[in-house]
Length: 89
Image (tube, rainbow, N blue to C red; front, side, top):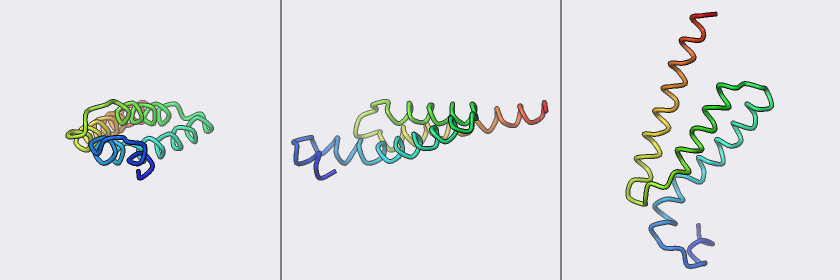
């Protein structure tokens, strides 16, 4: 984050948006790559959806809240779909 600040990026971006979203995008990209390697499409879809939620710009004020809420909705949707899928099997 220091490099971003050194380049002249505003405090709102460096400490408001970058901090909650960058680690989430990196971890979910790694998880999505692992799911793709295992050909696990539901888990790959969740990884891509979380990356999309984290990448959506919500402004520095709501970055933490919107990222958390969006990820919660994605994971709960995945859990509900998994329950339905397992009951059919």
